[in-house]
Every structure is written in C-alpha cells, then in structure tokens.
Length: 145
Image 1 (cartoon, rainbow, N blue to C red):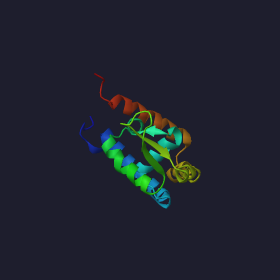
Image 2 (cartoon, rainbow, N blue to C red; image 1 turned 90 degrees about the vertical axis):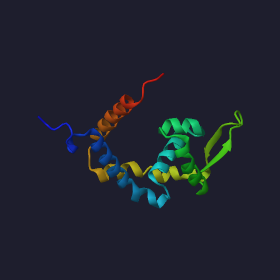
Image 3 (cartoon, one colour; image 1 turned 180 degrees about the horizontal axis):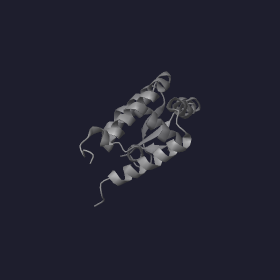
Image 4 (cartoon, rainbow, N blue to C red; image 1 turned 90 degrees about the horizontal axis):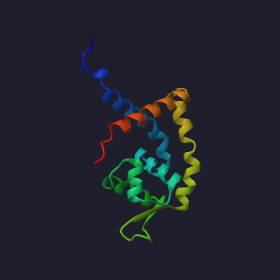
C-alpha cells in the first residue's frame, strides 16, 4: 500500500510544481512585452471582455480586488489600460484598454503557440489537462450559502 503522505502522491504538490514550471515558461516570452504572468492574465480578460468593472475582472480571474489593484495600476502606468469611474455607477471602476493595450494583442497572439512548442505536448493532451483542471477548480470552490 502506498504511503498516503508520500510527497509524490500529493495532488497539491503536482499542481504546485506544474504551475511554477509553466509560469516559468511564460516569463521570457512576456518580458519583452513588459508583462508579468498575472498581468498577462488581466490583459487576456480585457482583450476578451473589455470594458470590465474591477469586480467582474476579479471574478473572472478568481483574484480579490486587493490583489488586482496593484496589477491594474502597473498596467495603467505602462499605458495598456485606463481605470475610470463607471458612468452608470460612480462607486465602480471601469477598466478599458488603451489603443496601445489593444495593439499588444497582435503580439500576444504569438504566446500560446510558443508555450505549446516549449512544452512539446500534443494540443489534445493540453486541452484534456485544462478540462481536468477546470473540474478541480469547480470542485475546490466553497459551497454556496
């Protein structure tokens, strides 16, 4: 019988090492764009859904607004986005892309194929992994009230 506390048997260990390893692959690809991996995730959400409220972006990225705020400030400082009070709700910040932020998308389209090439895994395996991880994320969410 396998040791239930063996390091190599732990899902949390495999997820942690895999996440760090994959993010490390992104680092040299993102650096020329002036982006960190968390900033890249923000930009992905904005390219797909902008304009967004901070609350909605927080939900999409599963990050609390306090963690998101410094990322947004930095992206605004480098000219990729603008944070403004929402016209329909003064309590809410609306995030929109600048022309520079929209233009970055064309360069960013090179990122997924570069990561796939670096990983050297079949697309089908990566899609299956993403599906499995999505199930884990859903299962790990706390139950509603």
